[in-house]
Amino acid sequence: MGVFLTAGAIAWAGYTWEYTDGKKAEFGLDVRVRYDLYDRDVNPTWSPAGREVGPDFQYFRIRERVWGKLDLWEGAKLVLRLGNRWQYYTSHFLDPNNQHDSSAVAGGGSPTWEAPDEVYIDNLYVEWTSIMDSPWSVTLGRQDFMLGNGMVLLEGTPFDQGRSIYFTGASTTYQTECDTVKMFGFYDDYRDRTALIHDQKRSLRYGNTTVAGIDWTHRFTKMFNTELYYMWSDIEDDDNDGVAFANDGSLDSRIQFFGGRVFGSPTDLIDYGVEFCKQSARYPLDTDSDPDPTGSMLDARLKFKTPDDTAMKPTFGLQVTQFSGDDPKSGGENEGWVGLFDTYPIYREEFLPARFGALGWTNLTQYRADTCLQVMEKVKATVAYAYLVAEYGENSPTSAYNGGGNTMGELISLFVDWKAMESLVLSFEGATFIPGDYYAGGQQAEWLRLQAVWTY
Image 1 (cartoon, one colour):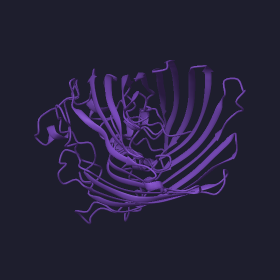
Image 2 (cartoon, helix red, strand yellow):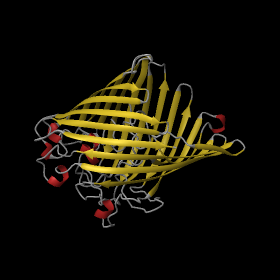
Image 3 (cartoon, one colour):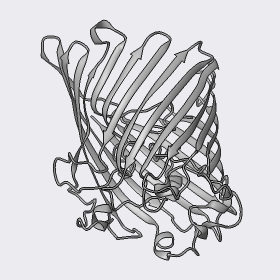
Image 4 (cartoon, helix red, strand yellow):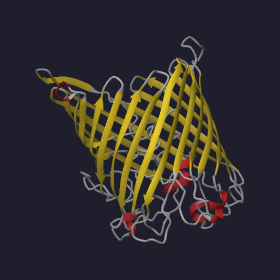
Protein backbone atom coordinates (compact mmCIF):
# COMPACT_ATOMS: atom_id res chain seq x y z
CA MET A 1 0.00 0.00 0.00
CA GLY A 2 1.34 3.43 -0.76
CA VAL A 3 0.68 6.88 -2.03
CA PHE A 4 0.11 7.23 -5.75
CA LEU A 5 1.50 10.57 -6.81
CA THR A 6 -0.87 11.82 -9.48
CA ALA A 7 1.19 14.82 -10.53
CA GLY A 8 4.80 14.14 -9.61
CA ALA A 9 5.27 10.41 -9.98
CA ILE A 10 7.33 10.54 -13.17
CA ALA A 11 10.98 9.76 -12.50
CA TRP A 12 13.62 12.23 -13.58
CA ALA A 13 15.36 10.84 -16.66
CA GLY A 14 16.87 12.60 -19.65
CA TYR A 15 20.10 13.62 -21.35
CA THR A 16 23.23 14.55 -19.37
CA TRP A 17 26.40 16.33 -20.45
CA GLU A 18 29.38 17.98 -18.76
CA TYR A 19 29.24 21.70 -19.50
CA THR A 20 32.45 22.49 -17.61
CA ASP A 21 35.02 20.59 -15.58
CA GLY A 22 33.24 18.59 -12.89
CA LYS A 23 29.82 20.17 -13.53
CA LYS A 24 26.93 18.58 -15.37
CA ALA A 25 23.74 19.76 -17.01
CA GLU A 26 20.67 17.60 -17.58
CA PHE A 27 17.64 17.97 -19.81
CA GLY A 28 14.48 15.89 -20.19
CA LEU A 29 10.78 15.88 -20.83
CA ASP A 30 7.69 13.77 -20.27
CA VAL A 31 4.24 13.60 -21.85
CA ARG A 32 1.16 12.15 -20.14
CA VAL A 33 -1.99 11.39 -22.17
CA ARG A 34 -5.25 10.47 -20.44
CA TYR A 35 -8.75 9.54 -21.49
CA ASP A 36 -11.20 9.47 -18.57
CA LEU A 37 -14.83 8.47 -18.21
CA TYR A 38 -16.82 9.08 -15.02
CA ASP A 39 -20.41 7.93 -14.47
CA ARG A 40 -22.05 10.57 -12.29
CA ASP A 41 -25.47 8.88 -11.92
CA VAL A 42 -24.95 7.66 -8.35
CA ASN A 43 -27.87 9.89 -7.30
CA PRO A 44 -30.28 9.91 -10.25
CA THR A 45 -33.05 11.55 -8.19
CA TRP A 46 -30.96 14.43 -6.85
CA SER A 47 -31.63 18.00 -7.95
CA PRO A 48 -30.16 19.96 -9.65
CA ALA A 49 -30.14 17.27 -12.28
CA GLY A 50 -27.48 19.02 -14.32
CA ARG A 51 -24.78 18.30 -11.76
CA GLU A 52 -25.47 14.70 -10.75
CA VAL A 53 -27.56 13.29 -13.59
CA GLY A 54 -26.77 13.13 -17.27
CA PRO A 55 -24.19 11.82 -19.73
CA ASP A 56 -20.92 10.45 -18.42
CA PHE A 57 -18.13 12.93 -17.92
CA GLN A 58 -15.61 12.13 -20.64
CA TYR A 59 -12.45 14.09 -21.13
CA PHE A 60 -9.15 13.90 -22.94
CA ARG A 61 -6.10 15.41 -21.24
CA ILE A 62 -2.51 15.92 -22.34
CA ARG A 63 0.20 17.25 -20.05
CA GLU A 64 3.69 18.08 -21.31
CA ARG A 65 6.62 18.93 -19.04
CA VAL A 66 10.18 19.91 -19.89
CA TRP A 67 12.89 20.18 -17.27
CA GLY A 68 16.54 21.00 -16.76
CA LYS A 69 19.12 20.62 -13.98
CA LEU A 70 22.37 22.54 -13.68
CA ASP A 71 25.21 21.92 -11.23
CA LEU A 72 26.16 25.19 -9.50
CA TRP A 73 28.83 24.25 -6.99
CA GLU A 74 29.68 21.16 -4.99
CA GLY A 75 26.45 19.68 -3.69
CA ALA A 76 24.25 22.42 -5.21
CA LYS A 77 22.07 22.41 -8.31
CA LEU A 78 19.41 24.52 -9.97
CA VAL A 79 16.23 22.73 -11.09
CA LEU A 80 13.60 24.13 -13.47
CA ARG A 81 10.53 22.29 -14.75
CA LEU A 82 7.89 23.90 -16.98
CA GLY A 83 4.49 22.36 -17.69
CA ASN A 84 1.46 22.71 -19.91
CA ARG A 85 -1.78 20.74 -19.58
CA TRP A 86 -4.88 21.02 -21.73
CA GLN A 87 -8.05 19.01 -21.99
CA TYR A 88 -11.35 18.69 -23.79
CA TYR A 89 -14.63 17.66 -22.13
CA THR A 90 -17.37 15.89 -24.06
CA SER A 91 -19.70 16.48 -21.12
CA HIS A 92 -19.55 18.77 -18.13
CA PHE A 93 -22.22 19.89 -15.69
CA LEU A 94 -21.41 23.58 -16.19
CA ASP A 95 -20.21 23.78 -19.77
CA PRO A 96 -19.39 21.33 -22.59
CA ASN A 97 -15.77 22.46 -22.58
CA ASN A 98 -15.17 23.44 -18.97
CA GLN A 99 -15.38 27.16 -19.72
CA HIS A 100 -16.07 27.93 -16.10
CA ASP A 101 -13.77 28.85 -13.26
CA SER A 102 -13.59 31.20 -10.30
CA SER A 103 -12.37 34.16 -12.36
CA ALA A 104 -15.47 33.87 -14.53
CA VAL A 105 -17.65 33.93 -11.42
CA ALA A 106 -15.82 37.03 -10.23
CA GLY A 107 -16.29 38.74 -13.57
CA GLY A 108 -12.82 38.00 -14.88
CA GLY A 109 -13.71 36.29 -18.14
CA SER A 110 -14.23 32.66 -19.08
CA PRO A 111 -10.94 30.87 -19.73
CA THR A 112 -10.91 27.25 -20.82
CA TRP A 113 -8.50 24.33 -20.62
CA GLU A 114 -8.30 24.10 -24.42
CA ALA A 115 -4.95 24.10 -26.19
CA PRO A 116 -2.87 26.16 -26.13
CA ASP A 117 -3.28 26.41 -22.38
CA GLU A 118 -1.00 28.35 -20.06
CA VAL A 119 2.65 27.40 -19.52
CA TYR A 120 3.28 27.19 -15.79
CA ILE A 121 6.38 26.87 -13.61
CA ASP A 122 6.02 23.47 -11.96
CA ASN A 123 9.39 23.46 -10.17
CA LEU A 124 12.04 26.16 -9.79
CA TYR A 125 14.43 25.69 -6.90
CA VAL A 126 18.02 25.55 -5.74
CA GLU A 127 18.92 22.42 -3.79
CA TRP A 128 22.10 22.29 -1.70
CA THR A 129 22.82 18.94 -0.09
CA SER A 130 25.37 18.16 2.64
CA ILE A 131 26.20 21.83 3.07
CA MET A 132 29.96 22.12 3.63
CA ASP A 133 30.10 18.39 4.52
CA SER A 134 27.49 18.85 7.25
CA PRO A 135 24.28 16.82 7.79
CA TRP A 136 22.23 19.81 6.61
CA SER A 137 20.53 20.26 3.24
CA VAL A 138 18.29 23.06 2.01
CA THR A 139 15.88 23.56 -0.89
CA LEU A 140 14.77 27.09 -1.84
CA GLY A 141 11.98 27.82 -4.31
CA ARG A 142 8.99 26.07 -5.87
CA GLN A 143 9.22 22.39 -5.03
CA ASP A 144 7.24 19.20 -4.46
CA PHE A 145 7.10 18.30 -0.76
CA MET A 146 5.56 15.44 1.20
CA LEU A 147 5.40 14.36 4.83
CA GLY A 148 5.29 10.65 5.67
CA ASN A 149 2.87 8.77 3.45
CA GLY A 150 1.29 11.96 2.14
CA MET A 151 -1.89 11.54 4.18
CA VAL A 152 -1.65 15.07 5.62
CA LEU A 153 0.71 17.09 3.41
CA LEU A 154 1.36 16.48 -0.28
CA GLU A 155 -1.03 18.43 -2.53
CA GLY A 156 -0.18 22.11 -2.84
CA THR A 157 -2.44 22.91 -5.81
CA PRO A 158 -5.73 21.09 -5.11
CA PHE A 159 -7.80 22.90 -7.75
CA ASP A 160 -5.72 22.12 -10.85
CA GLN A 161 -6.99 18.54 -11.27
CA GLY A 162 -3.74 16.59 -11.09
CA ARG A 163 -1.62 19.01 -13.10
CA SER A 164 0.93 19.77 -10.34
CA ILE A 165 1.40 19.50 -6.56
CA TYR A 166 4.00 22.17 -5.75
CA PHE A 167 4.61 24.46 -2.76
CA THR A 168 6.72 27.65 -2.87
CA GLY A 169 9.17 28.48 -0.10
CA ALA A 170 11.99 26.77 1.78
CA SER A 171 12.63 23.37 3.29
CA THR A 172 15.66 22.15 5.17
CA THR A 173 16.70 18.67 6.24
CA TYR A 174 19.04 17.51 8.99
CA GLN A 175 19.96 13.86 8.49
CA THR A 176 22.10 11.46 10.50
CA GLU A 177 22.21 7.68 10.60
CA CYS A 178 19.23 7.50 12.97
CA ASP A 179 17.45 10.84 12.67
CA THR A 180 15.91 12.95 9.94
CA VAL A 181 14.53 16.37 10.86
CA LYS A 182 12.68 18.45 8.28
CA MET A 183 11.65 22.08 8.73
CA PHE A 184 9.62 23.90 6.12
CA GLY A 185 7.78 27.10 5.37
CA PHE A 186 5.73 27.81 2.24
CA TYR A 187 3.52 30.59 0.94
CA ASP A 188 1.38 30.44 -2.20
CA ASP A 189 -1.16 32.87 -3.56
CA TYR A 190 -4.61 31.48 -4.29
CA ARG A 191 -3.76 31.66 -7.99
CA ASP A 192 -0.53 31.26 -9.90
CA ARG A 193 0.77 34.71 -10.82
CA THR A 194 3.86 33.34 -12.59
CA ALA A 195 2.27 31.70 -15.64
CA LEU A 196 4.59 32.41 -18.55
CA ILE A 197 2.33 32.15 -21.59
CA HIS A 198 -1.45 32.48 -22.00
CA ASP A 199 -2.14 33.09 -18.31
CA GLN A 200 -5.63 31.80 -17.41
CA LYS A 201 -5.73 33.37 -13.91
CA ARG A 202 -7.05 30.16 -12.38
CA SER A 203 -7.70 29.57 -8.69
CA LEU A 204 -5.39 26.74 -7.62
CA ARG A 205 -6.16 26.58 -3.89
CA TYR A 206 -8.72 27.65 -1.29
CA GLY A 207 -7.04 30.99 -0.61
CA ASN A 208 -3.67 32.63 -0.02
CA THR A 209 -1.96 29.82 1.85
CA THR A 210 0.83 29.81 4.42
CA VAL A 211 2.02 26.51 5.87
CA ALA A 212 5.01 25.81 8.11
CA GLY A 213 6.10 22.95 10.31
CA ILE A 214 8.66 20.50 11.57
CA ASP A 215 8.93 16.73 11.12
CA TRP A 216 11.22 14.36 13.04
CA THR A 217 11.79 10.73 12.05
CA HIS A 218 13.84 8.45 14.31
CA ARG A 219 15.01 5.00 13.24
CA PHE A 220 15.32 2.64 16.19
CA THR A 221 15.54 -0.66 14.32
CA LYS A 222 14.28 -2.11 11.07
CA MET A 223 11.26 -3.31 13.02
CA PHE A 224 10.30 -0.05 14.72
CA ASN A 225 10.61 3.59 13.70
CA THR A 226 8.79 6.76 14.70
CA GLU A 227 7.78 10.02 13.06
CA LEU A 228 6.41 13.08 14.86
CA TYR A 229 5.27 16.28 13.18
CA TYR A 230 3.66 19.62 13.85
CA MET A 231 2.23 21.82 11.12
CA TRP A 232 0.55 25.25 11.15
CA SER A 233 -1.46 26.65 8.26
CA ASP A 234 -3.19 29.94 7.54
CA ILE A 235 -5.75 30.37 4.77
CA GLU A 236 -6.86 33.85 3.73
CA ASP A 237 -9.50 33.76 1.02
CA ASP A 238 -10.68 37.38 0.85
CA ASP A 239 -9.30 37.78 -2.69
CA ASN A 240 -10.65 34.46 -3.91
CA ASP A 241 -14.30 35.43 -4.37
CA GLY A 242 -15.02 32.69 -6.87
CA VAL A 243 -14.34 29.80 -4.49
CA ALA A 244 -17.03 28.93 -1.98
CA PHE A 245 -16.30 26.18 0.50
CA ALA A 246 -18.43 24.39 3.06
CA ASN A 247 -18.78 27.20 5.57
CA ASP A 248 -20.64 30.35 4.49
CA GLY A 249 -18.51 30.56 1.35
CA SER A 250 -15.37 31.16 3.43
CA LEU A 251 -12.33 29.14 4.36
CA ASP A 252 -10.50 31.82 6.33
CA SER A 253 -8.79 29.60 8.87
CA ARG A 254 -5.81 28.87 11.04
CA ILE A 255 -5.38 25.15 11.51
CA GLN A 256 -2.76 23.30 13.52
CA PHE A 257 -1.87 19.66 12.84
CA PHE A 258 -0.36 17.44 15.55
CA GLY A 259 0.59 14.00 14.25
CA GLY A 260 2.74 10.94 14.53
CA ARG A 261 3.49 7.66 12.82
CA VAL A 262 5.07 4.34 13.78
CA PHE A 263 6.29 2.04 11.03
CA GLY A 264 8.71 -0.74 10.28
CA SER A 265 9.36 -4.22 8.89
CA PRO A 266 9.23 -7.08 11.42
CA THR A 267 10.54 -9.38 8.67
CA ASP A 268 11.70 -8.98 5.08
CA LEU A 269 8.19 -9.96 4.00
CA ILE A 270 6.03 -7.72 6.23
CA ASP A 271 5.73 -3.92 6.38
CA TYR A 272 3.40 -1.98 8.67
CA GLY A 273 2.53 1.60 9.53
CA VAL A 274 0.10 3.45 11.79
CA GLU A 275 -0.41 7.23 11.60
CA PHE A 276 -2.67 9.54 13.60
CA CYS A 277 -3.17 13.29 13.23
CA LYS A 278 -5.31 15.69 15.26
CA GLN A 279 -6.42 19.17 14.21
CA SER A 280 -6.94 22.28 16.29
CA ALA A 281 -8.34 25.27 14.45
CA ARG A 282 -10.01 28.59 14.33
CA TYR A 283 -12.40 28.56 11.41
CA PRO A 284 -13.59 30.80 9.90
CA LEU A 285 -11.75 33.88 11.13
CA ASP A 286 -14.39 36.37 10.06
CA THR A 287 -17.23 35.13 12.26
CA ASP A 288 -17.76 33.53 15.65
CA SER A 289 -21.05 31.91 14.68
CA ASP A 290 -19.56 28.68 13.35
CA PRO A 291 -17.86 25.93 15.39
CA ASP A 292 -14.11 25.44 15.09
CA PRO A 293 -12.86 22.16 13.55
CA THR A 294 -11.30 19.52 15.80
CA GLY A 295 -10.97 16.77 13.20
CA SER A 296 -8.71 13.73 13.16
CA MET A 297 -7.21 11.27 10.70
CA LEU A 298 -6.16 7.66 11.37
CA ASP A 299 -4.37 5.45 8.86
CA ALA A 300 -3.20 1.88 9.52
CA ARG A 301 -1.67 -0.31 6.84
CA LEU A 302 -0.11 -3.76 6.58
CA LYS A 303 1.69 -5.21 3.57
CA PHE A 304 2.61 -8.86 3.03
CA LYS A 305 5.26 -9.70 0.43
CA THR A 306 6.44 -13.03 -0.95
CA PRO A 307 9.95 -14.37 -1.62
CA ASP A 308 11.57 -13.10 -4.81
CA ASP A 309 11.36 -16.52 -6.50
CA THR A 310 7.57 -16.76 -6.03
CA ALA A 311 5.60 -16.93 -9.26
CA MET A 312 4.17 -13.50 -10.20
CA LYS A 313 5.69 -12.02 -7.00
CA PRO A 314 2.32 -11.35 -5.31
CA THR A 315 1.90 -8.79 -2.54
CA PHE A 316 -1.15 -8.34 -0.31
CA GLY A 317 -2.17 -5.17 1.46
CA LEU A 318 -4.66 -4.30 4.18
CA GLN A 319 -5.50 -0.71 5.09
CA VAL A 320 -7.96 1.11 7.35
CA THR A 321 -8.25 4.88 7.00
CA GLN A 322 -10.59 7.13 8.95
CA PHE A 323 -11.25 10.79 8.22
CA SER A 324 -13.47 12.02 11.03
CA GLY A 325 -16.92 13.42 10.34
CA ASP A 326 -18.85 16.20 12.00
CA ASP A 327 -21.30 15.01 14.65
CA PRO A 328 -24.55 16.85 13.81
CA LYS A 329 -25.65 16.53 17.45
CA SER A 330 -22.58 18.15 19.00
CA GLY A 331 -23.43 21.69 17.93
CA GLY A 332 -20.52 23.39 19.67
CA GLU A 333 -17.71 22.10 17.46
CA ASN A 334 -16.99 20.66 14.06
CA GLU A 335 -15.33 17.26 14.45
CA GLY A 336 -14.92 16.77 10.70
CA TRP A 337 -11.45 16.43 9.16
CA VAL A 338 -10.43 19.48 7.11
CA GLY A 339 -8.04 18.15 4.47
CA LEU A 340 -6.28 21.18 3.06
CA PHE A 341 -3.26 19.41 1.58
CA ASP A 342 -4.53 15.86 0.93
CA THR A 343 -7.20 16.47 -1.72
CA TYR A 344 -5.71 14.16 -4.33
CA PRO A 345 -6.42 10.52 -5.36
CA ILE A 346 -4.76 8.86 -2.36
CA TYR A 347 -5.81 5.40 -3.53
CA ARG A 348 -5.03 6.02 -7.22
CA GLU A 349 -8.62 5.67 -8.46
CA GLU A 350 -10.41 8.96 -8.96
CA PHE A 351 -14.02 7.94 -8.40
CA LEU A 352 -14.03 8.92 -4.73
CA PRO A 353 -12.20 12.25 -5.23
CA ALA A 354 -14.76 13.12 -7.89
CA ARG A 355 -17.56 12.34 -5.43
CA PHE A 356 -16.09 14.34 -2.56
CA GLY A 357 -14.98 17.26 -4.72
CA ALA A 358 -13.90 20.42 -2.89
CA LEU A 359 -15.01 18.94 0.44
CA GLY A 360 -11.91 16.74 0.40
CA TRP A 361 -11.52 13.59 2.46
CA THR A 362 -13.91 13.84 5.42
CA ASN A 363 -16.63 11.81 7.19
CA LEU A 364 -15.23 8.58 5.71
CA THR A 365 -13.85 5.30 7.02
CA GLN A 366 -12.37 3.03 4.37
CA TYR A 367 -11.56 -0.67 4.90
CA ARG A 368 -9.36 -1.64 1.98
CA ALA A 369 -7.61 -4.77 0.71
CA ASP A 370 -5.50 -5.16 -2.41
CA THR A 371 -3.29 -7.65 -4.18
CA CYS A 372 -0.59 -6.92 -6.74
CA LEU A 373 0.72 -9.43 -9.29
CA GLN A 374 3.64 -9.30 -11.72
CA VAL A 375 1.56 -10.93 -14.46
CA MET A 376 4.38 -10.76 -17.02
CA GLU A 377 7.91 -9.40 -16.95
CA LYS A 378 6.68 -5.92 -17.86
CA VAL A 379 3.02 -6.12 -16.84
CA LYS A 380 1.79 -5.50 -13.30
CA ALA A 381 -1.84 -5.77 -12.16
CA THR A 382 -3.44 -4.57 -8.92
CA VAL A 383 -6.94 -5.45 -7.72
CA ALA A 384 -8.45 -3.61 -4.75
CA TYR A 385 -11.67 -3.82 -2.73
CA ALA A 386 -12.84 -1.10 -0.35
CA TYR A 387 -15.81 -0.98 2.02
CA LEU A 388 -16.79 2.62 2.74
CA VAL A 389 -18.59 3.88 5.83
CA ALA A 390 -19.64 7.40 6.83
CA GLU A 391 -19.06 8.17 10.48
CA TYR A 392 -22.28 10.18 10.50
CA GLY A 393 -24.65 9.11 7.75
CA GLU A 394 -27.10 11.84 8.65
CA ASN A 395 -24.41 14.43 7.92
CA SER A 396 -23.86 13.81 4.22
CA PRO A 397 -22.40 16.63 2.07
CA THR A 398 -25.92 17.42 0.97
CA SER A 399 -29.14 16.25 2.59
CA ALA A 400 -30.32 14.94 -0.78
CA TYR A 401 -27.70 12.17 -0.51
CA ASN A 402 -29.18 11.01 2.78
CA GLY A 403 -30.64 7.54 2.50
CA GLY A 404 -30.74 7.17 6.28
CA GLY A 405 -27.72 4.88 6.71
CA ASN A 406 -23.96 5.00 7.25
CA THR A 407 -22.86 2.56 4.53
CA MET A 408 -21.52 4.59 1.61
CA GLY A 409 -20.92 1.49 -0.47
CA GLU A 410 -18.29 -0.78 -1.98
CA LEU A 411 -15.55 0.18 -4.42
CA ILE A 412 -13.80 -2.40 -6.62
CA SER A 413 -10.74 -1.20 -8.55
CA LEU A 414 -8.36 -2.63 -11.15
CA PHE A 415 -5.05 -1.15 -12.31
CA VAL A 416 -2.88 -2.65 -15.06
CA ASP A 417 0.51 -1.13 -15.97
CA TRP A 418 2.52 -2.27 -18.99
CA LYS A 419 6.06 -1.02 -19.52
CA ALA A 420 5.86 -1.25 -23.29
CA MET A 421 9.26 0.40 -23.76
CA GLU A 422 11.94 1.74 -21.46
CA SER A 423 10.47 5.20 -21.96
CA LEU A 424 6.77 4.31 -22.35
CA VAL A 425 4.27 3.03 -19.77
CA LEU A 426 0.67 2.23 -20.73
CA SER A 427 -1.99 1.91 -18.03
CA PHE A 428 -5.59 0.81 -17.70
CA GLU A 429 -7.35 2.01 -14.55
CA GLY A 430 -10.96 1.38 -13.60
CA ALA A 431 -13.34 1.22 -10.67
CA THR A 432 -16.97 0.36 -10.04
CA PHE A 433 -18.92 1.78 -7.11
CA ILE A 434 -21.87 -0.02 -5.53
CA PRO A 435 -23.68 2.54 -3.34
CA GLY A 436 -25.08 1.70 0.08
CA ASP A 437 -27.87 3.09 2.23
CA TYR A 438 -26.01 6.39 2.71
CA TYR A 439 -27.42 7.41 -0.68
CA ALA A 440 -31.10 7.83 -1.44
CA GLY A 441 -31.93 5.88 -4.58
CA GLY A 442 -28.28 5.26 -5.37
CA GLN A 443 -27.24 3.20 -8.37
CA GLN A 444 -24.00 1.55 -9.47
CA ALA A 445 -21.50 3.78 -11.26
CA GLU A 446 -18.09 3.42 -12.93
CA TRP A 447 -14.85 5.27 -13.53
CA LEU A 448 -12.39 4.40 -16.32
CA ARG A 449 -9.02 5.72 -17.45
CA LEU A 450 -6.63 4.89 -20.28
CA GLN A 451 -3.20 6.46 -19.85
CA ALA A 452 0.13 6.65 -21.65
CA VAL A 453 3.26 8.22 -20.14
CA TRP A 454 6.35 8.81 -22.26
CA THR A 455 9.60 10.09 -20.75
CA TYR A 456 12.90 11.22 -22.18
